[in-house]
Length: 424
Image (cartoon, rainbow, N blue to C red; front, side, top):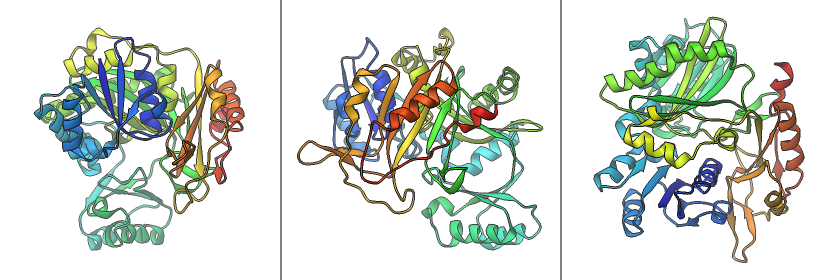
């Protein structure tokens, strides 16, 4: 069969890599892809939001299955466009992708169906938000309602910071229309855990846990980024936490979406906070996480294409997910200055080392070919260096060793990815 993957980051590279292992697949295309993906798939210069061009390409090439990697096209309705054209596609429709597309919708859903989450209020007026903050406990959390590249969440320790945050989101429009509406949320403390799942509208199958590092600098300092590294599994995701979430969060979310007439087929990403009062939902995403995918899929034994098709066909109840009894760590190599200002176009050296080393992976996020066929940097997050090991400490050691194989002029990384492992 022929498969098209939509997206061009590290997550999509990991998805393409996993799809390439399926005996069902003869040919993979990726739109727009990147230099790393080009080793496994034919990259085509179509943007993820160019729905008409994507549909036309899928028809022309007689694509059997399209997999949507990114949030923007899902929230924008790319799955609806493919289905209207009679094409087979993996991902939630627009009316279900709102689970990620609107923080206010997801919070209201959780409140209505008694799914554990932080207390909150929603505002469309900056004046009303500022007035509310005068009596709100600090610290507090401000969230842009819409998509903001994973950066639209502000943790404010003081009233002054919170007021400045309202200005940033609602008045200065740092994230555009995503900040037209904001959620002001109770600040929760505890360990964060990410749990990905496959959903077919009725049945949910949970993948292995992971834990992301969002801040740009060591010690969880600096600005929020799209993610500077991750590890899997999380030692804090215990059998007791799993049992609680299965009872009160996972299936409850799938059932709530169905009850709302928004049947969800695809990936639900559960961002959890393990509080003293039990696990609570921080956020939902409607697609694979980035860089969580880069540590979860290397541990997965299933044929991912079979699972994609089961989600589409509503037969997921016939499958059990199987993960290796090991661990994985991903360290993101970024361009120095990310996520604010950084230079691109530097040659990347040392990539060949990954071809002959089992258990070591280099997932490209921001790379492209220059005119002479040299791979150069083309983004803030450039590469996700992933390694497996018998346990988390070994995987972490292996991943950091592998970061030394690669060089480019303004290479930057955090040095404490997975450090929480030592505290578990």
